[in-house]
Image: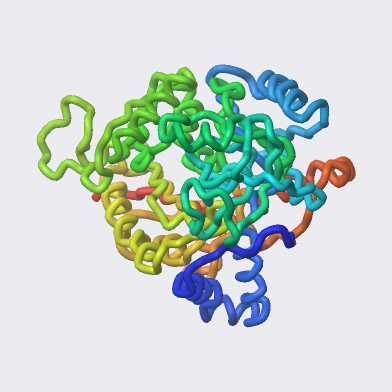
Length: 469
């Protein structure tokens, strides 16, 4: 795992995270040395992609087995006959898992270089090609058709259009340039297509660009777990309070067999359009998406709701998903985060505003699922402790399926309550390299275990509203 350094964070942010992972309860339970080891492992894991690419099958349009067969043929084409196992998750029947091979240390670096931004670099590590807008720099004499080495400028120091760069850069693999340097930098920002087609990446992972788009949705494993935990039923009225880009929204609709109503809110209009496009592409008609601020989704006057648009009357929904805006510090791969401590800690108040609205909009007997894609104690277990103290009519519930580990100590929750949470924490998996040979010798049960553990950092809590407010 020496290919990449640990995630680069501002010192104030790293110290803040460390304080959470080495809080008094954790150190008392694990010991200082083990708590510190786990934290350092997490920082290294965050800069690498998960061990598996996860895709969700749109069961509204096709069976899992049919799509699995189509995907097998597609991967054979992508990897020139190299056989990749495609596993169906035993607890998430609509989820398929494809192993990621790497890091591969024997790739010869080329004299012709392309430097990409950090976000583009992260996408390449998960199987994407390099698109022109992500290219920051290219060697002086680069032509279309050249074999090039691609690097990520993880600290954002490379100047746009530079002909060489000697700063901190991480090797991502080799590819074939689709355009010359001149074509790339003389026609920006109009160019949006593939700039470098990756042929020999450090992490070998399938590309899902335009691959079975009506049948497959590229989705991190814990994100797929969330909708199963919500357990939507046909005919119900469901609210996805912070829905963009619509992965969970469309999953909810598919699990309901497209029978009922799924209301999706997001306050950015372009993201709402993306939700609508995804619903159309996946053939789902039960979704209604609105550009609306979730913190204002509760109708404060009790005038009759006649049009079904936000804001909504109290106790209008059978189930609510609050996949809250968060610091995103569980996303992988992420080789660098430039956020300040103020930015990282700004989400807790917003999450509480949204949670308060969700608790009011939920019907008695209804289910509220809260999730984030971050690893901080403040945005996860502390929010659960706050919710249980603030809303006596909400009760924490067991989750099914239980794929992640239990919650982290430090927020004053009981051991039983921690077991009812799901924290996906990649630091529990030892660092390891993988290749096609090792896959052949690995049991399916062990691969499933690895997929469950070595994924993005994520958190899920499930509540039920036991009486009306």
